[in-house]
Image (cartoon, rainbow, N blue to C red; front, side, top):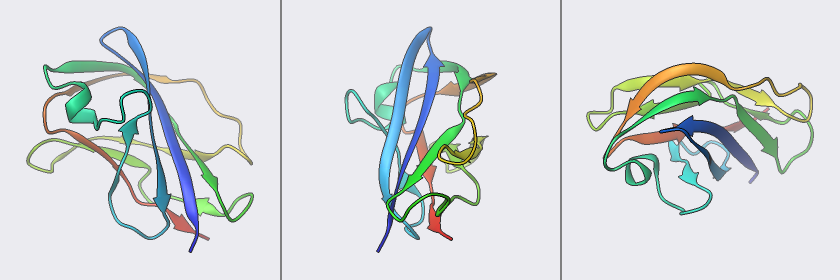
Amino acid sequence: MTTTYAAVQMIANGKPYVFSVDATDGSANTAMVNVVSNRGLGDTFSAGGLITHIGPVTLNSSDGTGASTSSLGAVIVDPQNNVVAQIPWVDCEQTPILPSMPCSIPVGLNYRMLITTSNT
């Protein structure tokens, strides 16, 4: 069984955040959490927030260089499980990490950031 460490940085409400997870490859929709508080996206922004810069999601496999993939990257879903944003992924061991992209993604209570990883 392999695992993939996935992380994404963002600017929300004018402050920097990093969300990550050490996901078991093949497990669907693993929730990413705030590295400081260990809370999910909705708990971190329970009073509401606006993400103004995000991504990309970086992947690092326990199985070696180039072994991690994610079909959709990370997705942000609202309380009704509607996808409100999709963040592409990059294997940071093979590809340079691009700067964060400007965006306007509202988030609030019960929002989640999910990722499904796989091993190639």
